[in-house]
Amino acid sequence: MAMQDVVVPQLSESVSEATLLNWKKKPGEAVSADEILIEIETDKVVLEVPAPASGVLAEIVKSDGSTVTSDEVIARIDTEAKASAAAPAAAAAAPAAQQAPAAPAAAAPASSASAPAAGIASPAAGKILSEKGVEPDSVAGTGRGGRITKDDAVNASAGAKPAAAAAPSAVPVGLDGRPEQRVPMSRLRARVAERLLQSQQQNAILTTFNEVNMKAVIDLRNQYKDRFEKEHGVKLGFMSFFVKAAVAALKKYPIVNASVDGKDIIYHGYFDIGIAVGSPRGLVVPVLRDADQLSIADIEKKIAEFGVRARDGKLTLEELTGGTFSISNGGVFGSMLSTPIINPPQSAILGVHATKERAVVENGQIVIRPMNYLAMSYDHRIIDGREAVLALVAMKEALEDPQRLLLEV
Image (cartoon, rainbow, N blue to C red; front, side):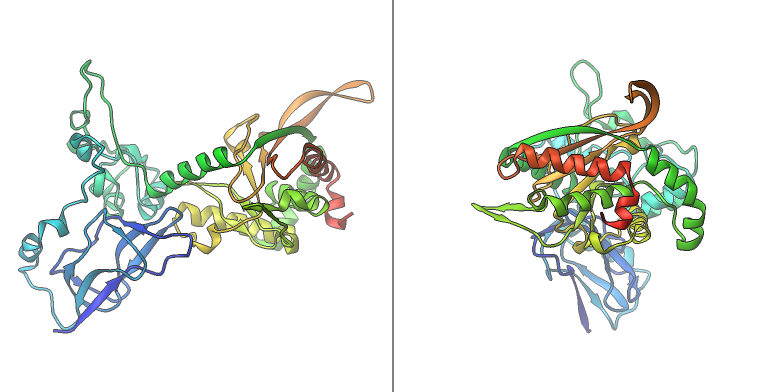
């Protein structure tokens, strides 16, 4: 018998622990080298753990839902054994602690353990359902807490209805007969909640607003979008202009690109711009490194790549770490105005909203223009109102005369 340990991949310094989702194999079943055995959820990404060698899954050391750390042994593979018909029995004989999902937090009612996580799909499952045009809410998940697994997604069909296990009767019901559902937060959601609360408590957040006439950017985009896509293989969007405008302003007002460390202010000589992206697991903020050195095409390609990989759960820890300034585009969802929350340890964030035709006054005349409201939240501990307002005005001016971005004037 030759045993090969299956271990947790090396996590980044900013991630101390992770959660095992659902094992795709049972003890006694054959596995192939590089076959995905389990997904591990951190507060930033979902990592896939492949089999280090071919053989038979001899032992599951850590069950679904267990909290694990870097390099911890979670299973063992017998590289000399072969799967037999007795595999199911072996699985049944495994210790209950290895097979049963981890118990919920002690503070949660016992009934919450059976509440299905309706519509919550793993990244791989989410991609398959999206391609099929199937709504996650219509699929009964067989994973931990009702999570939709890849196999569930493969077997799902359009128009499918949830199985009886996901029926309201399985959901805790209040005394008045109205259903309620309790599901644990994912690590990502819990971490986002923690960081947002931390931001509100530790930063002196203030928001300044302005409006920008997007006509020049829209005209430029309409003039060159077809040639741009043909030349660069990616569509010309608007986010690259916002990134370029932000970098131009940050160069003029470095304090907006700085961060606080204790009683020190750290001025960053580089421009790493976080781009808020929606994913099946929630909001993530991948970082455009050295955005000042990227062309419009480079930025569009990276943003498109971030969107696809966020949907598929393939963003790396490195891509989600750091950043000196962030941009959140609520406009893609129809938001007209918001006050974005700073992403610590950054000191400012730009909120972009929906561009709408509005009546404005130009040279004493009422005209219709495509207007966008910009909002910049900043840490008033180190950024004075003057610098914040001027930085936002610099972004507005760059967007209203986008040729300046190309000439860097």
